[in-house]
Image (cartoon, rainbow, N blue to C red; front, side):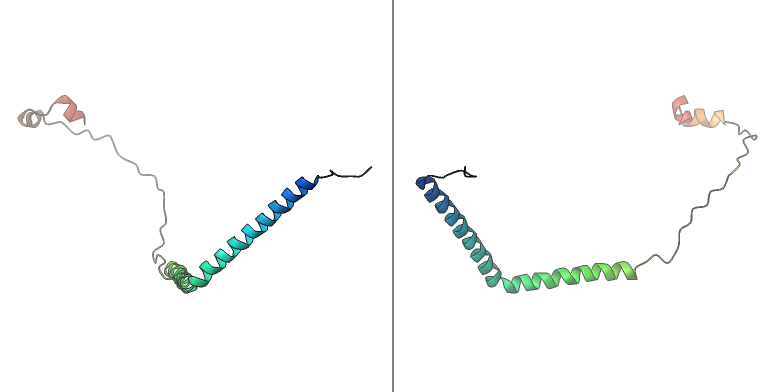
Amino acid sequence: MKFGVQLSTKSKEILIYCISMALLLFLLKWLEAYFIVFNYRLDFFIGAIAILFTVLGIWLALKLVKPKVETRIIEKEVYIDNSVQTAINQQEITKLGISKRELDV
């Protein structure tokens, strides 16, 4: 008993045709990419240099511009003396026409 599937003559022709078309399509796409790179190689070169100098400029700026002052956060307890009550000047409130809500705010 043979291992595998036996193909008819017509199936073999279709398979060979499909493989040859795939290879031709691959060759055409490769040639298209080659000619695009060949025709625009100066543009690619200029773009690569621009990207290189942009990255170099960003890196250099980050290295040169470091903060000269170090920020430190210090937590301290602050005690507020609430024993002194301030009196509300009712005459001034009525003179200005401030409502109770405005006074609360």
